[in-house]
Image 1 (cartoon, rainbow, N blue to C red):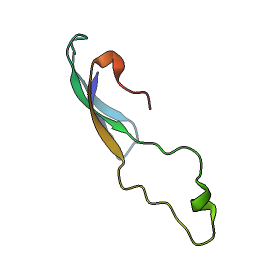
Image 2: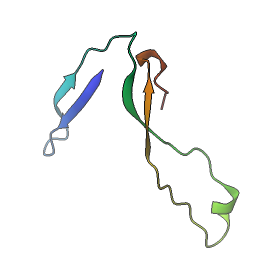
Image 3: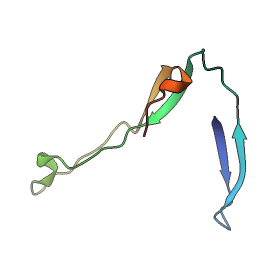
Image 4: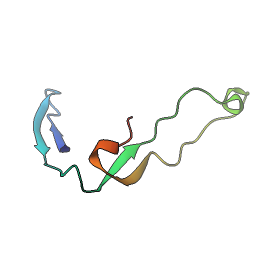
Length: 69
């Protein structure tokens, strides 16, 4: 699994990637991003806006069960 990615701010490429090995039979804690899909009827109304206060969720699960983005 990827632990960290270091980016080159000048050239825009990847400098370094840290990987780590996981055991498929042990639970791991991962942060899963929350991506909103579609558009709510309330947000479409004039003068309304949607504020997403939570951008990721910490999940404890087996590596094979990590939710897809």
